[in-house]
Length: 81
Image (cartoon, rainbow, N blue to C red; front, side, top):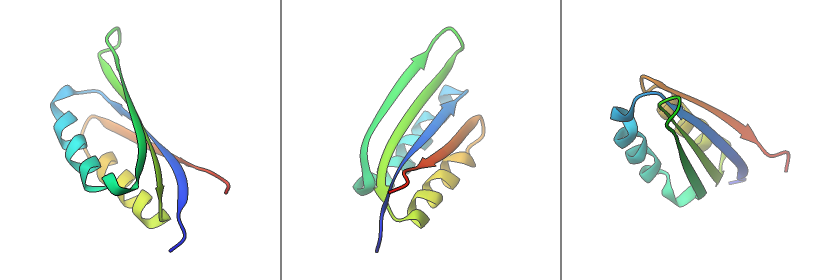
């Protein structure tokens, strides 16, 4: 199956849901190239970037699961390759 490289940008507005996000990301760990988390203390939010190489359906499923969590926003950008 053809894969695509994408980055999911996640903004977390409530620390209580971090474990939920971690559990979901663990389910998709085989597709994750790397990730970075930045705590932005001045705004009391967390910013997470996840880079993937996966089929489009898998990327969409992951983004959807994370985006359904309350107090979380997730958006995906795909490479053109």
